[in-house]
Length: 588
Ligand SMILES: Cc1cc2nc3c(=O)[nH]c(=O)nc-3n(C[C@H](O)[C@H](O)[C@H](O)COP(=O)(O)OP(=O)(O)OC[C@H]3O[C@@H](n4cnc5c(N)ncnc54)[C@H](O)[C@@H]3O)c2cc1C
Ligand code: HEC
Ligand code: HEC
Image (tube, rainbow, N blue to C red; front, top):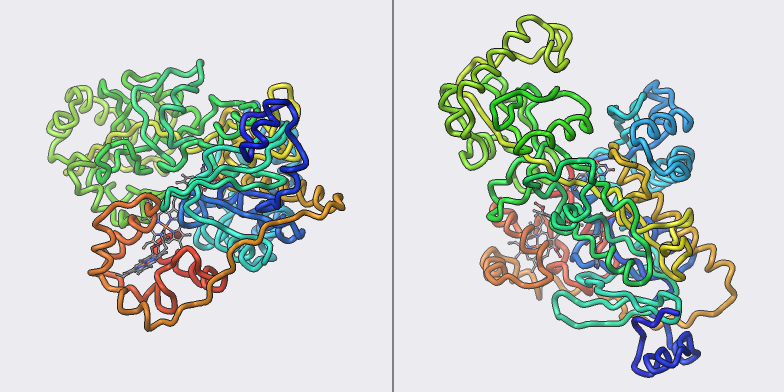
């Protein structure tokens, strides 16, 4: 029996005596029927699913805002949708299964099948009913027909819709800035969480029948990624953070400490196009960037791969270089082919000049010799590589690496100064391993038995192994929604099957909207500057978003027009209105 953590000193004694699971604890009111840890796409999907089924739900997030990584993410892989049909892309679950198992090599076969057969209903139709519209579908290496579905502004549209839906349900509540530090394990069951408020420091024990961990991946935790490196791939000399600093993987420890097993931990989706974010004093954050016309050379000044090839092949070729980094070289004529994506546009980097004309980010010189010198590359080798590249372009066929087979497909020659060089590093973006779960997303122990009371969903489960060893487009957001819903359905089924009357403790009532005149005077750039002057725990998003407010000289009332500064106890109506302002910075 597990007795690592208990509710009170009294039960601790019972635990020592081996009597946990006692009546005294069972009779104390629960804080919720289900506690969801994490308000990203998977946690929100679980909350909506359960809320609609009448389950009493409490969602906790360490951030002050919802959405998790979905606020910076793009699209969803979905199979055989009305949009595909309308656009003439004939798709079927069988086709998707065969594409995906071939690409991933060892994707979990059950989840692959379940996902291929049900994604259209569980994602597309479901979101459509919430007025989320998919408008575009893109292709990708792994797919024989386009399956990568987009809403107008990207995944932020989806989390906003889910959040609004959840707020409309009186039995679903949210609490922000609550960092879950450990799980309460009572007898052999997970019975709640211990949460620490990042603003006040207050620690609370919150009890529930079921705990759903939806805390995301660990791609932002470089130590952990390196500690779980694949033995068949060379260890990188240097990695950049390609996700966010919040992808720490705390949920892995929560689950493991409660008895769950971790699986596929050495599988990471490593992107090869990370350049150092010049704004980051630590120089570990990546900007996701590319120049589709560029030529890549390694530290020896030599070309080493087809720059336009499969990303999984490029990764292997890149890691085989010593050191495993490359410089993308292009000229002034191809400057316009430079692009960035991911979180970059949020903070004003949408303007390429901030990167291309920043000597901290991009090297620029009038000759290739000077460029090579600035980059610390052997100049003769660089010149030879560029000359050879130009020769291949003239020939109309890349005889060296197979990048183009005709003059029409070839990039322009590199011969118009100034010349540019950007150094790139590998960067973990998404985790493809994590908590082991069954088909109902119940967390499993090392013997394959469910850990009672514990569910894990989303990227925390490595997207249920659906990506196998090689990541796929849209196969993180999609599985986040599907696994969130599956957990929600499992718990809803348990709820429906039980005739037990749960005693749920009352939560603080929503606050009425305060009178506008009492707060409007405080909304000035001066008060904001004073607030930002001190760095406070639990205010990460407030700080980073309002630095931008000052930088762009936004008027406070643009977002705070009918509301006080968004405070923790705002009512539901207020929170719904608040989601409208997220789009002022997030979404494309
Ligand atoms: C730049 C970028 C672009 C992407 N684009 C795509 C894409 O186009 N398509 C795609 O399929 N995938 C994409 N992804 C991946 C996708 O965004 C994630 O896989 C997805 O958001 C995972 O959802 P989740 O709910 O599992 O976790 P997350 O979205 O990571 O949310 C986890 C939440 O849990 C909270 N949390 C974590 N630990 C704790 C704790 N201890 N206590 C309390 N709260 C906690 C976090 O604050 C966060 O809100 C992208 C990722 C990045 C970084
Ligand atoms: C583009 C939208 C936008 C603008 C403009 C804006 N804010 Fe905000 N504000 C937000 C959002 C979103 C939050 C919630 C952020 C969070 O909790 O992380 C917020 C929260 C706040 C908070 C509450 C922080 C807390 O949780 O205690 C204060 C105070 C605040 N804003 C002040 C201002 C002032 C002053 C201005 C004008 C100088 C301003 N804001 C302009 C969007 C905006
Ligand atoms: C004034 C601009 C602004 C507004 C308005 C705003 N944000 Fe943000 N948000 C940012 C910036 C900047 C970042 C940091 C991005 C980065 O890492 O560079 C961020 C990051 C986030 C992240 C964290 C992603 C991660 O893990 O790093 C979440 C979640 C988020 N925002 C949600 C919201 C939500 C929900 C709203 C609406 C209530 C909102 N934001 C409104 C500017 C804004």
